Amino acid sequence: MERNIAQISLFAALIAALGLMPPLMMGFGVPISAQSMGVMIAGTILGARKGAAAAALLLLLVAIGLPMMSGGRGGLGVFVSPTGGFALGFPFAAWVTGKVVETLPLKPVGLAAAIGSVLGGVVTLYAFGIVGMSIVLDKTLAEALALSIVFLPGDFVKAGVVGVIAQSLARVYPQALPWCDSNTRISRL
Amino acid sequence: MISPFSPVESRAHEWPAFSKLLALCALSTGLFFTDNVTVLFAAFACTALVYGIAGPAFLRTALVTLRTLLPVVALVTIWHGATGDPRGGAVIILRMITLVVWASAFTMTTRLGEMVELVRSCAKPFERIGFPVGSLGLAIPLTIRFIPVFIARTRSMDEAWRARSESRRKWRLFLPLLLAAMDDADDVAEAIRARGGTNP
Image (cartoon, rainbow over all chains, first blue to last red; front, side):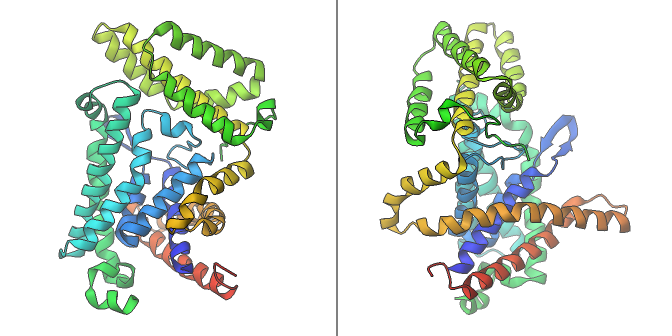
């Protein structure tokens, strides 16, 4: 119990810290924030339930007014802005990422993490983000997708980076990924 | 850190947080039921007027929030200018700005303590289905405490990296950062347990 609370809180802090770091600039001036990578990592390492809890805890803190979304945004305004759907999608993205790595018996570990990150941190996240954007900006879903498509390449790169990180993590600290080996999973229980 | 809290006390600080939240939800939903430019402009103008009366410090905080919307405003203007529907564009921009400004007004005029109380009472019904309301009081400060820790650690790792290498693959820092965070989580869990656990 203590361990769960500590992990959830610290990963919420990690997602927030990644969002507050200066974004990388990709070609044609599209800013890439590391925040959604934090969400993918939380799902990959903590699993579906705890990963989603970490992302939800972050949203709770944003909702009560702390400036923890990328670019230092905070408060309820975040959720009604055009990108509010992406914010609300964070816990679901972490959940799907975690669920995929927990259930798909894929080797190598990095591949499982990358696929989980694409399905959770890209597909699920964009599903929420695009619906939110189409409501606030009064556009069709296809138009909202077109408006966010410049960010897609960066998000695929992030999923790839998560795969690389998970692969190295499995080598140097396999206890961190209880789903990647049935023996360690049993010993952790 | 930039804070979305109001720098000045106002009369709205005294209103009960729950009523403010209900009013915000009702008003925001209402905005979606009208496509009338005049109504939306009136809502926006009233809001701007109230902010103006509340003082320059209030107004400045609101403008900081709105700055993040600028690219979207530009995009919508271009889109609707190109498709020959400026009226539709005005509706969208006015509604979007008013929504965000109202929501930030709630955040600015509600103190953190009240906000935490509000969360607590809203979460109470979920306690029965196993939602750990009590542990929120532990999780929230832990998260807030560790954000500056992680930022400072990333900065020092980055400096160490730059002193030793010309390679600019910054994402490589992520793995040591993650390992340190996991060790921290273990340490924190142990410290909580040593002090009597989550339910002393």
